[in-house]
Length: 380
Image (cartoon, rainbow, N blue to C red; front, side):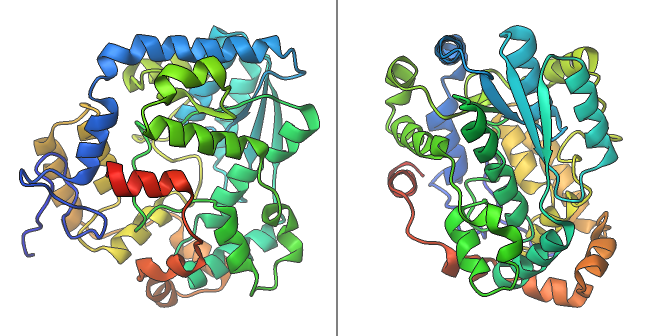
């Protein structure tokens, strides 16, 4: 195999369309991370206080529920519930989007977490036949499989927010740990415009009407917060003057996974699935990472994850590169793929052909919002 040119700090291949190396061989993603988080140790106490300011404002609204928490059963959403219920005593409503492939592991962790707290909980599911048709059509039209799930996960906030007038969504997320969201080649968002544009030409519109027409009001507040944050304004003014509609806990609290895993295991009855603790809440979790390797044979399912762990200081580059090269040599066995393809009526050959072109989704995307343009033009 020809040697792959990589970022000199992380292990991202320079051949990825969005990766640009500077004169030191460092990629734009590492440089962007440094601009945003190199001073984290100096500001993390301030960020925690900002989070507490937001919590204070939310409590003063005296709503039936203080916050809504999207709960997948994975470590991060369970930790978000732990923080909100156990530390800050918030009245929490949790909601889970069941895509038809939610793992037994996830269901058990959700049940244990709800039993360990005072939170209420809702499952929301689209008809299974509709979901299977959506998966198939998004593979064919966009070369991605997770868009319907991402749309569903984003949407489930809408109904309880409107019904109970909940002031804020608190998720187990944050820019610091979102290791795929900045990569247009592989990231699969639940963008309403993309979803609507794809569904115009398929026969499932009536069956997925709930996914087609709603955009939570909190999204617009989040867009404003993102724009201000990218301009360096958020840290000083947003917690004081604007209550964001959506909060990712890791934008304010430290993602120390050793402590987090110990805490949720002890306090929330959380259990990991085998040796892994990443993305095992869904039976299909290996498939989108396999798709990355079809689009770009120079990456493995772990490339983006390892690179982010290097940036976080949780992994040495040498160790990551060694594991990456070993993974490149291994034949890929993808859990759940054959059964999934059988359910949607597609052969593996058809699947590989449809997902190979990363640009297919571009024709369904409209113009980026202002903050996206600003970020890509000036900060990457």
